[in-house]
Image 1: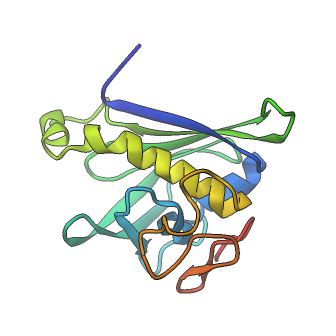
Image 2: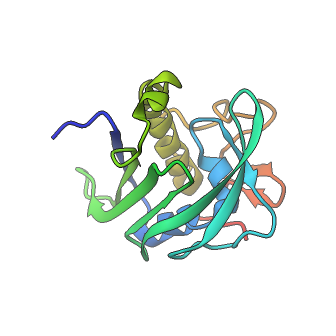
Length: 186
């Protein structure tokens, strides 16, 4: 079933589901992998690692600075994590261990933006989210791949939102955050 309020993209990443989950469950790393270029940093005093029911704030910018408070509403260690804020749409990641066509072990990562249960869908259309999210999700998955493996089309040096930095392996991209393979800031 095709639903315009469920945007879903997937990518094979040559890393284990648990390695990927650690990045997704660490709010301090969300700005490192964000393909929309709107997530700036985790708010202080939030949890270092997410779990079901965790509330975590993010510093955002979409033509203006703002803050958003999210609540983890879906959580299966190493397999699934999702969160929502006051408007109700869910950002969700699904992780399935698999191998690629060459037999390389890794994970099929599916990222979803799910606004099927949101009231006021008109505002989502008006703001252009339905148009922008597919490309932003693809960029996020590419940056996640780059962060973990140092590979990934469209996510390497020169594609980081901050033109003064690179999101490549071993490169510092934020205060106390390193974007090297398997690195998790805490």
